Figure 1 (cartoon, one colour):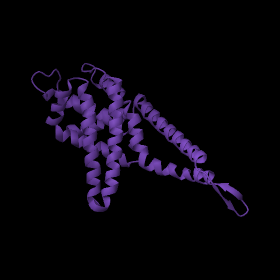
Figure 2 (cartoon, rainbow, N blue to C red):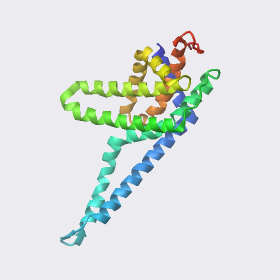
Figure 3 (cartoon, helix red, strand yellow):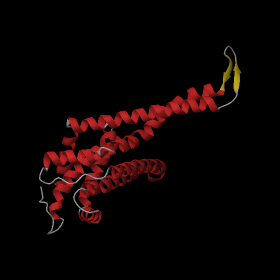
Figure 4 (tube, rainbow, N blue to C red):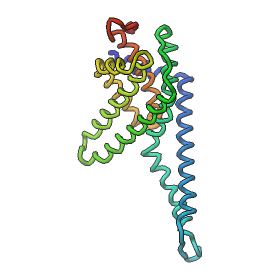
Length: 238
């Protein structure tokens, strides 16, 4: 099955030192952002919250001090809800590098052209916001959907990852419209790989590498199916 082969090869590529290094860099950037955000919240509260209270044995205690130290409780909460989407955004910046590595190693005679950095930046931001939106929507609808909530979560994220990352892999080789037509022609396979990759979103540590896994898996999928893009295609099925 093509979808399984693409996913297996993508996972193997994720373990390569050059790709794993990018995943670690994404984690480091994410942690740095969260620490900086927490420090900023701490000092903004400390400076702007007026007044205080007199406590036995402690004397005068500023509200700013109380609430600023209390804000540290936000760190694990922010990490729980935002760590994966934010890390996905940072890791998504390196997705193009992953696609280049995969094609250089596995398809040296079928390498595509590099995409513009601004395109990668915009796509990474879009994926991050969409993943966050899906997570929040699933959280809100869980009481109403019950056991169907995971279907929404994995289905929506699988569709999103498939759409964005297959399109990215295809646009390295063909125009936007042709890439979209190819994705629609193989919609079932794209969705299957997308849902399988989306399962990683609920696995700690693995969830922050999902965009890199998606970039590798969908690069393989594109190379496997692009031979059926039409009589004018210069690609052969893998």
